[in-house]
Length: 271
Image (tube, rainbow, N blue to C red; front, side):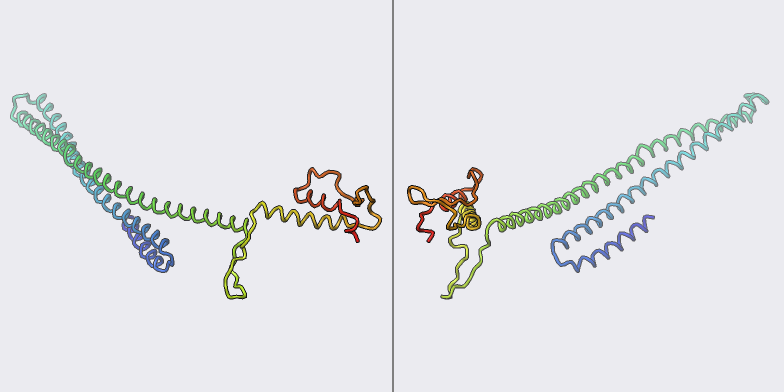
């Protein structure tokens, strides 16, 4: 399983590196390169941790062998104890066979103590050293991987933030370009260049001028004078009876100015 996983990592790394060579933008290529480096580091860490786990397995295997010997010796000692008790009942405690059986029990007890000590040493030294080695390797590799991941993440977020800033600036520039006429350079007959925004009005002046033009067109359409459309006042001014709004409260500034100018004109201006 580990061999197949390692082979998959290797094949993927080769393919991604070949694809990375055809990327046109250095920023994208750098992003992919760092990703491959991160995967390679992860694979190296996996290999190192696998070695430490193998040491742990060997240590547990040694402990299992010692424990098995101890259990076998204890089982054998129980059989010898039963044989000694049987001899004691049948031929007496002072018989030669009974004494030999008793000596076997003493040897069993000594061997059991030795095996127990060996097992305790394996647990307190060999297994402990293997666990500490694994923890140390895990700590170092985790710190290394954490540092690499943070650096890679920071570079990605920095690029993302830069793209967001660029997009925001482009949006602001497009908005500004939509609110104001774009400045274009034209060549004058004398061969000199000038900008078509020379004498450009402020937004307020531009709006008022547009209002005046719109108001003038409306009045030309609605308030055209006719020979029978007005009457003469005392001051010789003709007031036309064309249809006009009864109030100028809702009119814009330009419309109010044109309304006042168009409604009251001297008679002679009509021809």
